Image 1 (cartoon, rainbow, N blue to C red):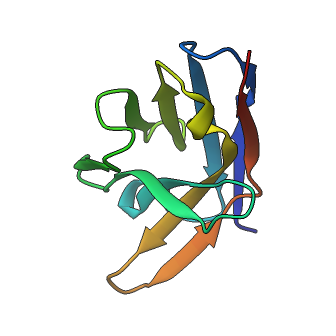
Image 2: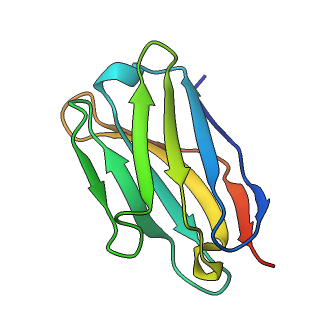
Length: 118
């Protein structure tokens, strides 16, 4: 069955770094567009970064220049390198897999908590 398993979250001080990983299985990773979203308490889920099957990337304004999304199709894994973390980056981070062309689908991971605090 389809699985998206995030890892790498945790507690980090402001200015620190974390790298999130999302291991995918149960679908064809290489043809999927992958994304990272986050949801802070009391807020709606928001897009953080995406990387298409053609390796084109896009970022939210709030993280551009600090975060970097990448993928390794050989490992069916997408990464989110987060640098210069701020308290406002605190949220649950979710991995997303989607394909807009047939066969269309969208899958979500269970999320991993990132807390930025001194």
